Image 1 (tube, rainbow, N blue to C red):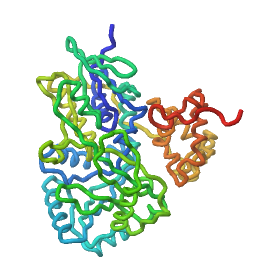
Image 2 (tube, rainbow, N blue to C red):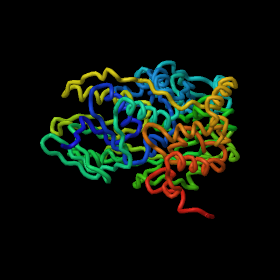
Image 3 (cartoon, rainbow, N blue to C red):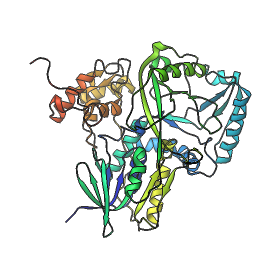
Image 4 (spheres, rainbow, N blue to C red):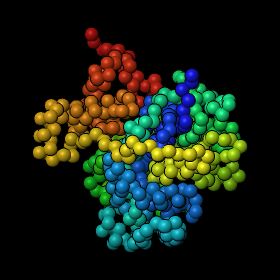
Length: 484
């Protein structure tokens, strides 16, 4: 007898994992098929980490509704899932009369959408809020905030798994067929069977949509490159600093602090056709520096420690070229499918609101029985470096591995690394441990600790060094020993 799921979700990023978590509130057999070895390898782990307020999205759009809803609830969500979050506010700065008109336009739109507290402020007020910000004037958005996109995505996935959802990594979908009301989903490693399919495949959602019998969608990839600045720069910045939006609501290069004290400069925005091209380029890096200096006064090359890129899956109108709203649909002609396409920014902010809407669509067709054992709370790995001395002393007495610092830049202990290696999702790549502990995210970017972490993974998981992955499938760290 085939093992048949009630729901299979294709895509385990922040939205897919939010959907999994919300459906785990009910008595259902749920699986998630993720093509990468972890939940943070794609767009969900390659973004600015902003909690958007919702002032640039068309009134009444799904983007606007979900951004407002997700923003307002996030203090309680962050506490429930034990993820770091700061409601910092945001400055959207301007220099010209055109910039002022843009700010007034989006202030009015934001207020229409329900964003609270938007203000136009002068240069002296900018300096009081954040002396590092450029600009002659600004719109201040107190509702905006910053979060860790890795930890949030991981927290949603772990909480879903703790409530019974099964995750299957390295499971790229290559074919979907349907017979007798049961979907047969073939991946590169295994075949699955399910009554319902939810397409949350991000950059590949148009491809999966076509496999499901819903053609017509075509995504454009907009690549954004970033610089990561050292925490030495982070001490100068209080909140995200954005330039005034263009006429279509898009922002140029901005400067955003992270919840951990770094600063991100970016993103750029270039159309790409290879959705797995995460390289960075010298011309764009130079552009980031030139534009970044206009908005963040303390930008210096000495602070640069890393660069990276992400790709936003935009659904664009074929005739006008305008970016479209999120698609969240259930069609009568394609039964038992919930289809999400074009989920880009503000997808991080909108993940749980989108998930609840997916549940509501399902509930129109199927009776939902509450899962009486559902637990909405998830506890993350305790950060040793953030504890006071008395707590640190108790931790070391309880486990001597807390007294062994593996990552010197971020003060991550061996005990934390081991906990991360044994995470409930079974992820044991180098970046999987990095995203769960912040090891290798400091000034030396793993120069000291990376091989030590690889050694711990090998020992804890009984793996040879040749089997240890850096991040994505095939990214093996070692080919053998230098010396025997």
